[in-house]
Structures are given as C-alpha cells and as structure tokens.
Length: 197
Picture 1 (cartoon, helix red, strand yellow):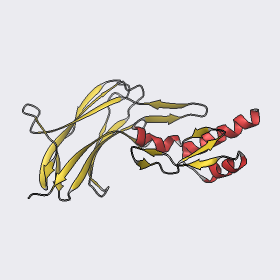
Picture 2 (spheres, rainbow, N blue to C red):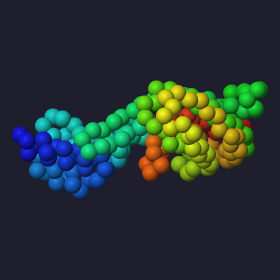
Picture 3 (cartoon, rainbow, N blue to C red):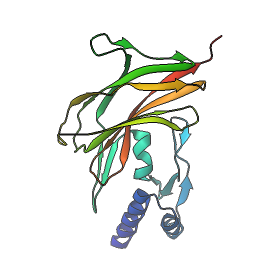
Picture 4 (cartoon, one colour):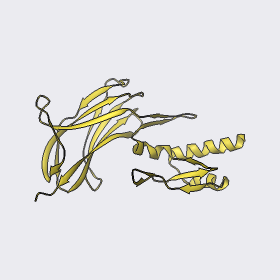
C-alpha cells in the first residue's frame, strides 16, 4: 500500500508539472486510462487519468480554467480562488461611463479591478486585451507595493484599442504571486465587436 501511495504521489507531481510521458508510464503500471476533461465546453490540454475509479487532473492546466492561484510545494498544493470583479469604463474617474459591446473602430477605455479574499502574496498584476484570434493586443503590468494585501482596488491607465475584427475581445486579469512565478489568470470579461450596418 505504501508503494502504491508513493506511485500516486509521483503521478500527482507529474501532472502538476504538466508532463505526460511519466504519467503515461504510471498509467500503464496502474492500469489507468486517459480521460477527456471538458470545462465550459473547452477541452483541457492533456486531459486526466482515471485509476481505480478516481480521476487525477493536472493542477497547472486547471489554473487558468478555474481562474485560481496555484502554488505547489513538495507535499502540499495550495489553491486560492479570490473574488475578482472587472468593470470597464470610459471617461475619467470623475465622469465614468460603463463600457461594453462596440462597433468596429478605435475606443479608449479603462479597467477597474476589485479583488478581495486574496489569501496569498501578489507580487504584480497584469491586465491584457486579447483579440478574437487569441492574440494579445495590449497589456499593462503593475508591481504591487504591498504584496500581502488581502483586498485591493485598481484602475488601469486607459487602453486605446482598435476593434478592427468582429467577435469577442477578452479583457484578462492576472496575478503573479512572486517575482519568479508566472502570471495566473484570475478573471476575464468579453467585449463583443460588431460590424456597423
């Protein structure tokens, strides 16, 4: 039983790193089978592995899908899902107007972010605009002055975006926990760009 627990621990660590070669070997050893994982109609890269009726999922791949912060240590995985609200607006802070779906053209807008229940450090934050083809059009990064803030509000400088394509543009908000870690997606909002009739 102890060997089985060690093997399952190796499998979990392999999945956390996103590697599949080692996972395939463990899967064959324990007679597991690959399973597809679909979240909000999008298939998760790498899928999961089912062993003895239990499904094991790659934690790192779930990070963006769950829009949660994940920190893996040698024997513990921490998952933090803070509340993140995004509001898009035009004008200055004294005369804000909501900003949403648009007709093709160039627009200026800012993103107001409210974060609460953040139970981990935040080294820096990033807000991006992604076009319907999945290309990043613009990005703003801000280094936090107090990494231990559980609640904060943040407003970006104005974005000036040419909505030249029709379809959904995504506003994505990320947090980087430490200087050496990667940015992790915590929230996104869609703007529909429509053709003028």
